[in-house]
Image 1 (tube, rainbow, N blue to C red):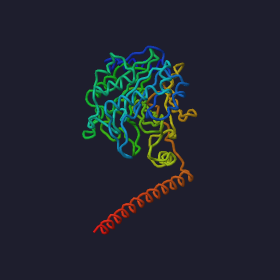
Image 2: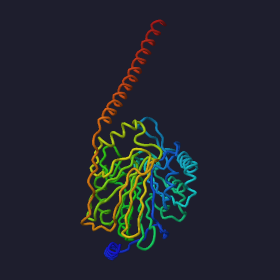
Image 3: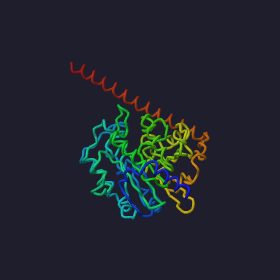
Image 4: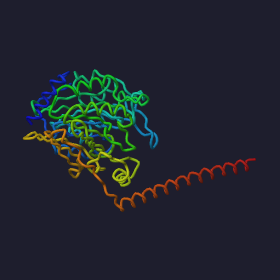
Length: 403
């Protein structure tokens, strides 16, 4: 611990303190829980399990509600301001979540696409407004004098703990200024703010939260890799700050990835799917097969977890400080990894990639499901074609009889 604090002190002298974090909490902090993708119209089965771990903070990493709604299988429509407010209220007063809010755990967070207002949305969708942001901050019980109420976006920073037992938590908003045409994610103001936050308040441990997964290369996900220059810029900035862990959501499954940086391994713990898992329109078994055995994941160091889940970060301060990174399901811990904060960064590297052996039963099951889906689609299409053709024939006959 002494070595790491000397290093942080030197770092503080070199970088300068800069602006302090937006929020200060000097109480003792040892556990932070987080989650994403919670539909207000579905059962909320995980809140009692989260409560069992008694976290100091719970962080929403997006999709706390699904304010938008489907107009076709892969199409979404943005809500009116009244509908947006109604969906947030529905989630806030749901019995299980309401019970959790009465606990000592502080609840903070940012939005992602569905609680921003539209699937995979950004600034070009013209969804963002100060009124929408105020409604979401009201949902979080954000203080009236919060700096986040004065910004175009929900990004914010938190300094938690005191002395050597201090955590810095930085939450990004990758939606409010996301521009797909220019491939810009955070916008100039948020980039400047983030640079200052990463340079200020040297701490034993830092958490960076983003709804968009940062390290993943999986093909179908909305992710930072879709904006490669922005991703490289963020990775370069994060790599300057020692002992930083990424937390993310959005994907509808949980996993853990790692990438080597100049200051040692950069871990990302991803948790998503508090009320529904995988893809809504794909059978869970097929999605499970795809994620585990088909989709590429060069940085995965643990087997993905497809069932309903939430994440926790637990800091063990006694002795040499360590951080326990976990993804939990309804039946307990699904992913577990311990990070030693006192290791020499130059000697510390990512653990070996997790290799998943292909299983014949999964392959046969996946092929069978795909075959059944194709047969069903062919049957439906055939039925539609025959019905339309029969209707045309009947119209022609009726016309002939009329003449």
